[in-house]
Amino acid sequence: TRNLTGGKNIPTVLDTLRENGDASLDDLVVKSSTGVLCVESGGPVPGVGCAGRGIITAFEKLEELEAYEVYQPDVVLYDVLGDVVCGGFAMPIRGGYADEVCIVT
Image 1 (cartoon, helix red, strand yellow):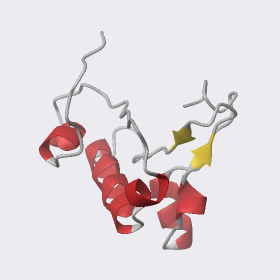
Image 2 (cartoon, one colour; image 1 turned 90 degrees about the vertical axis):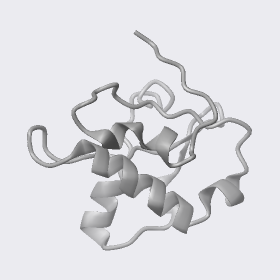
Image 3 (tube, one colour; image 1 turned 45 degrees about the vertical axis):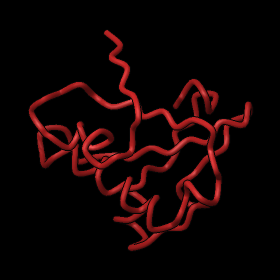
């Protein structure tokens, strides 16, 4: 995401929800200079809580806000950790959010 946004940090879904209690698509989606739409799910402080929960919360919020209908993307890429400690990282597959999975090592 940082490469797409020219090194700019963008607000995460979890931070925005924690700080504001709610969020709109304008709060969560950042358009890069090349037109790529970016969203960062965020997570807990390392070592505290479940990072997979951040992914699940982000998916649920984007669905609630109808992001996929509003933006109608041709392709959606999820960059998630391959960590198997927490099942939340498999959410794109389990939740029907992904038709294909590519493993990059």
